[in-house]
Image (cartoon, rainbow, N blue to C red):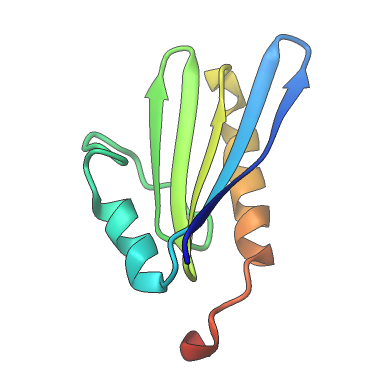
Length: 104
C-alpha cells in the first residue's frame, strides 16, 4: 500500500521547513514519482545528497525531492538562502531510510 507522511512544518524565525515522505509502495513507484514531470518538473539542479535528487529555487523558496527505497521525499523552505541547510537535512534523512529487503 502507498501512503503519505507529512512529518512536519518547522518554523525558525520567519523561515519554515517542510518534510513530506511519500511511501510509493516499491522502489519502482518512488522512481516513477521522481521521473514524473508533474511532480518534479524540468529545470532542476542535482545536489549530491547520497541519493538521486532534484532541487529547485523559486525565489524565495527552495525545494528538493529525492527518492530512496520505496520513498519519494520532499523537503522545502520558504527561504532560499537556506539551500545548504535543506541539502544537509535531506542527506541526513536519506541516511535514515533503510533499503527494502529486495535491494540488500
